[in-house]
Image 1: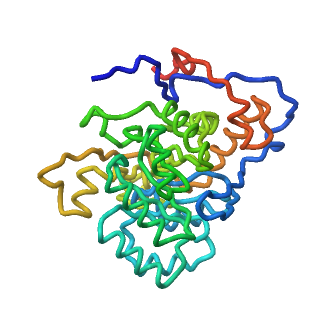
Image 2: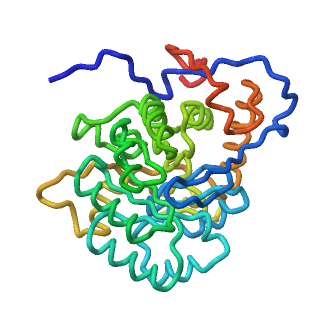
Amino acid sequence: MHIETDPKLDFKDVLIRPKRSTLNSRSAVDVTRTFRFVHTGHEWTGFPLIAANMDTVGTFSMAKAFAPFGAMVALHKHYPAERLVEFLKSDVAHNVFYSIGITTEDLDKLAFVRKQVPVTKICMDVANGYSEQFLQTVKRVRDENPDAVIMAGAIVTGEMAEALILAGADIVKVGIGSGSVCTTRDLTGVGYPQLSAVIECADAAHGLRGQVCSDGGCTVPGDIAKAFGAGADFVMLGGMLAGHDECEGRVRHEQRDGESVAVGMEFYGMSSDTAMNKYHGGVADYRAAEGKTVEVTYRGPVKATLQEITGGLRSSMTYIGATRLKEVPKRTTFVMVGAQRNTVFDR
C-alpha cells in the first residue's frame, strides 16, 4: 500500500489568476487551434470542443449543430452501420469521431463501415484504459487504420498516456469517475481529480507530440477554461450538453395553458442500468452498473449553450492576455481556493 501526499486538484479547487493584458475586446481572441497529429501527420483546425460519445449527446443532430462552430462530436457507438455509412458521406463528417469499444463486434463493424466510406477519426472508448487488452487493441486499430486520427482512453496518469501514444493513439482521453452521471468512484473507490489528471497527462503526452482530451468534470464554462489552462488540447462534454433539441432520449412534457410543453429530458451514463438494459439486455452478473439516470431541464437548441461556452472562454482569455487558445496554458496561473464564488443567493 502506498499513499501519495501531494495535493491533487479538481476544477472546483482553483481559480485562474488574472494578468495585465493589452486585449480590449473579447472579439480580439481566437478560440480555434491547429493540430498536427503524431501518427498521421494530418492537420485539423477548429474549436477543440467535443461532444461526448454518449447516446443522448453524441448524435448526428449534435454534429450538424456543432459544425458552424468548428467543434467536433464523438458519435455514440450504437448507431447501425448503415446509418453511419450514410452520415459519414455528409459535409460535416470531417468533424466527427467514429466510436468503438474493444469487442470483436465493434472491430468488425468498423471494418464493414471502412470498406464503404473513409473513417478519418476514431474514438476508442473503454471505462478502464489500463488493461493490456486495451493497449493491444489500440495497436491493432492503428495498424489497420494508418491514416486515421485515434483518440483512446479513459486514463488519468502520465505513464498510461505515454503507453497509449506509443501504441498508436494520437490523443489520449483523460478522466475516470469525473462525469456528472458516472458512479465509478462510489462503486469502486477508483478515480483521480480531473485538473491534476489533465496536468500530468498533458505533460507526458506533449513530450511525445501527442494530445490530450479532458473528458468529464466540467459543469460551467469556467471549467472548460481551466481545462485548457491545465494543458488540455481538447475538452469533451456530456452533461453540459444534455437536454438540448439535438440530444436523443425521452422528453417529459407538461400541459401549460392548454399546450404540451417540453420541460425535462432523460440523461444517463453509458454504464448505467438504463444503458445496460437498452443495449445489453441488462447488467451482467459479474459487474455492477457504474452510472445513473437523471432528468435534466429541457434547454432548447444547443446553439445558445455553445455561444455561452465560447463567450466565457473568450472572456477568460482577455483576463489573462491570451490572444490565441494555444497561449492559454502559458498564461495560466492557478490559485487554490476554498470557494469558487459568493453563494448567498443559492440558498
